[in-house]
Amino acid sequence: MNKIEAWKTKLSEQGNSSMTQVNWCTANNISLSKFRYWKRKVDSTESAETNFLELSMESTAATAISLEVSGVKINVSPGANPDLLQKVILAAKSC
Image (cartoon, rainbow, N blue to C red; front, side):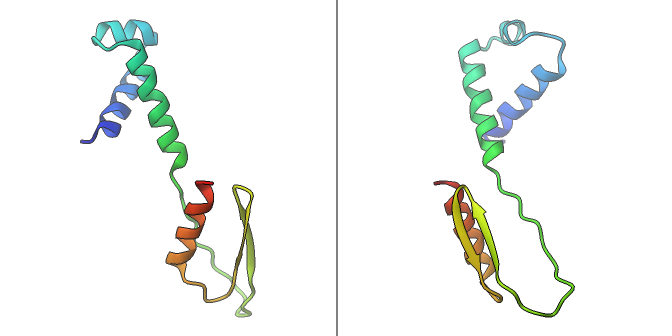
C-alpha cells in the first residue's frame, strides 16, 4: 500500500468516527498539520483523476467533434487515435 492509499484509509477512518480532526489526530498520535497536509494532497489527487466515458453513435455518418478542456479547444476528427486523444486531454487538464 502506497502513502496515498494509506492516508485515504486514515482519512476515511477519521471521517467515519464521531471525533473531530483534532481529537482523532491526538488519539492516533498524528500531528494536525500532517493530517491536514495529507488531506489536501489526497483531495487534490482524487480531483485530478480523469474518467473517460465511451460514446457510441447510432448514425454511421462520421462527424468531427469539438471539446473544450480547461479552456483548451480540441477538435477531434473521425478515426482519431484514442490513445493520442487521451494524452492530449490529460495535457490540457494540466494547463
